[in-house]
Length: 446
Image (tube, rainbow, N blue to C red):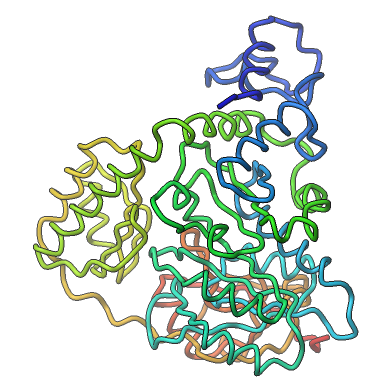
């Protein structure tokens, strides 16, 4: 498969042209990559008005993912999340009531930022199972039907996160069937699942009926940090295709990274080559490691194939891994998450196996998350209101302003505009959060 962006930049770098343009390093510097870091010079195309090498490269990605259209982001899935919500919102048209999105409660904080910027309300799909991590949100098609029936207005979309941060997956096909039966688009945050397309069978949300989907290419594919995809299904292309570039431009920098664009471009060639075979080998190694840990007595959760999640004292387990020369993706008092890809060496699996030689203490009891909350201000009003940072113990009865959450997992415990309860506070403490931003003075929800 061709790599037009990379080919152009390499040719430009080799030309030794006098760089009388941005960036200021002029192709020289201590990192060694500066010669390939360019701006929109003649022939380099422009990401948001692509009709040359970038358009050709994005078409290659469209062919690989078998979508109606796949577009690049150099600012991660965060940019794509905002863009696809904007597309769904504007595609639904203006109505008399305030726009409403029906969303899984484990949405990334980028979703809340999109709600603030686009000014829509959210009705939450709450986890159907009791307890559990803030990262997880079980949603069945029957539960989705019930939630839709209970709404006081028609949502402009349904938004879910799968796989979640712990590796749990929803039945996207069944959820899409429910949505499409009511003429409502399904949007999927698939940030952790770009690689699913290259496994046997139909696993990627775009193969299962999602209308719009974002992938963080950099999380699971050989792509630099910040590289991501916005996918549009063939069925949804007539609704969203024309405005997709404008939507990405609305939420993106006018100076997209050409290093990241080259990385996305080169990934196409890698994905079209032997990536699927290498991925199959990776997943087999992960499966073997999971089985070995189960044999040792670890509680290994059911996850997507390239992720290993243990229900254990994750903080202690992370220390053991570091002592063995390995770093985990995520750890909290109850979970340890390891992410693998075909570029992990065999020794990486061996180090994890050596570090996790025996089960750790029984995990702490997780704080029960708020099952229902009081939204007293719109997300936008709360996020744009004057705020102050206070200790979580002082926050009961106050209104959450900007969400207080670490990244990872970046899943808000208290949502902007919600009144903080004791349940919120217990959960905030359980996840090690000591402060929360609250609105200085309440405003009426509009």
